[in-house]
Length: 228
Image 1 (cartoon, rainbow, N blue to C red):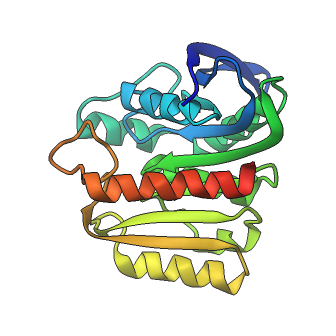
Image 2: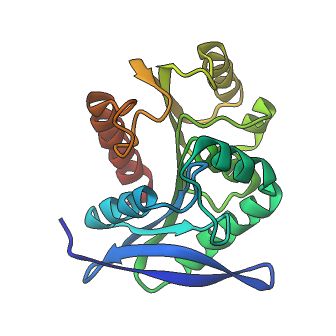
């Protein structure tokens, strides 16, 4: 695994600067990844995931979509998520894609998007909004409008939980059908026995190590296939 460096940065978006956490190999170059937060915000778990990607050779940037705010309790997180201007958030994610593609360390000039929960939904919406996305992975995230599938050109990996009260299986199956109908290259996986946020190892009450390991392996394989 690569030795890495990491730091907080500011990158340009729509005439302003957006904070973000950047992690990348110390010596090597690699593809770019925009890592999109859960509804908690840019918390240590998301920074840790960026570092994991960097150890595997990716230049990973997590935009701070809450601009300095974060939550530790569900009610706080719900309030921040509801107040988020999602159109602005997508603009900031696209700007992060463009910023990464302009970095010398990003080679080849391919950039993927990956997100969890709220971030997983935003990853899908960004893939529909911008053809600059070369590959997308959504962990238990769903766009509010399934018709967006018609605009997706990037290969999409969707990772969902059987016991997810916010994303019922009927909705997962409907999303898969939309992807199939519009010939989007995709793989949609449902982890039996798992709950929403099964990948988050900072939440031991719902973390599912076996599902998380498999999802991580598939994520790395997806990005290796379509970004390198």
